[in-house]
Image (tube, rainbow over all chains, first blue to last red):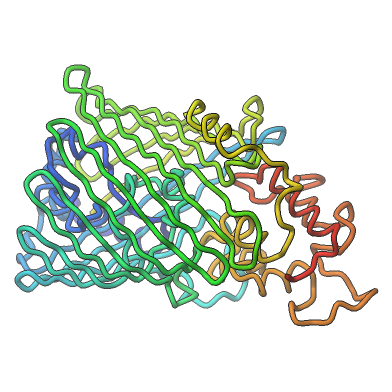
Amino acid sequence: MRLSWLALVVGVAIALAAAPAAAYPQFQPALGWARCSACHFSPAGGGLLNDVGRDEAGGTLSGRGDGKFLHGAVELPSWIQLGGDVRMALLGKQLAGRDPTLLAFPMQADTYTRIAAGPISLNITLGLNGAARGRVAGASPLTYLASRQHYVMYESESATVRAGRFFPVFGVRTQDHTAYPRRYLDQSTLDEPYALEVGVNGASWEGYIAGFVGNPIPSTGSGAKATGATAYYERRFGNSIVAGNARFAMTADDRRGLLGAIGKHWLEKPGLMLIGELDLQRQSFTGGGTTRLQILGFAQVTKMIMPGYMIGATVQRWDSDLSLGGASRNALQLDLQWFPYAHVELHLLTRLEATGDDATHPNRLALLQLHYYL
Amino acid sequence: MRALVLGFLLIIGCDASTDRSTSWSYIHASIVRPSCTSSACHSKLGSQAGVDLSTPDAAYLLLTGRGCDAPDVAGSPPGNFVRPGHPEASKLVYLLRGEGGSVMPPDAPLPDAEIEIIERWILEGAACD
């Protein structure tokens, strides 16, 4: 009975469509783990969970069920790891001064495969593109497929080297691709570049540098197709994590240089997880035009009110041209996440978003998401 | 955050949209590409409504109905979305302002300051420069 239900879920996963998967950075210091790779195979977090992550997801977060692959029904050999993510969404939105709209759509259907031989592993994400909007009539079936990530990784106790398609370690790396650090800093759906990344870590720190090029396969991605480099350094002090970011990206039309800082702090007594990111970016244009300074701010507080229930509030700001009045986007967001059983999440996201300087007529959005991970 | 932003504004000053370039390469890199070309929308992959805005050349051809290298002939037929010299008669402006139908981008409409730059580009002839 259980297997037939799982087969149905897998079938739905294959039949439906996708958005990107990433990590829940709230969990990192709150659960006492030093870094994202404590729970995920990827050093950037997100995607396939390792044994520790599956135990945490099944035990600590939901408090019920077995977080292992197929709920523990099948034990895979150690050289192969499999998994997946399926998300269905119900979206209601009302732009300022307009009628509300309601939309139900498949948001994500990704499968994960990791094949390891000693310190070397091949990591492949294969799924379907998201379907929040309709398809172009006559589109090739190939455009429905997506492989957000595929890379080879070497890892030792103190170092990782990755080559292939993935997001380099950068920013807060939230699972929400519409969060401003992802939407406005080239980390949205299918923006993954091809990159070479080197990471080193010690007991209380980790650092990464990466070079990247835009995805050369037009039918499998979007974004700025930039070429550039990133650097990230993170240090932990007890319940606090402090990190610095740098990024340079160039296209035929522009050059962007970014410096940023990330902070996370776990307030043990009230059980609050605080996360913040602040980035300053300079964009210049090869064809002329005023160089722009841009700023991105992200601040979030999250609380696990009891096992299986998490609430959060987030404020975000993106100003695409600091010296031009009225070019900002501002958002206030409330999240309620329920993890009723291992592998299952129900997430209600509500957001007020003001465009320009007018905060009195915000756009309203509510997204209810059913998430199952395999 | 507000105090920080105000501090920056004091340092760098505050411009109006008329201080910004109206070259197409600037408009594409600063407004069209970051706001319109995500994977599900007007990327080469998404091409919603058959509209691919992912490169300056492709976007210009689609919006104006003429290629960047085409001679600027007086009286040449306008594209579907832009009527050079006439923002008030350009479908693109109606879409961006959400007048008379759907609004673009549908999830996060552009700030007025950015729409005004596009209107000035159209008013000044919608050149591909």
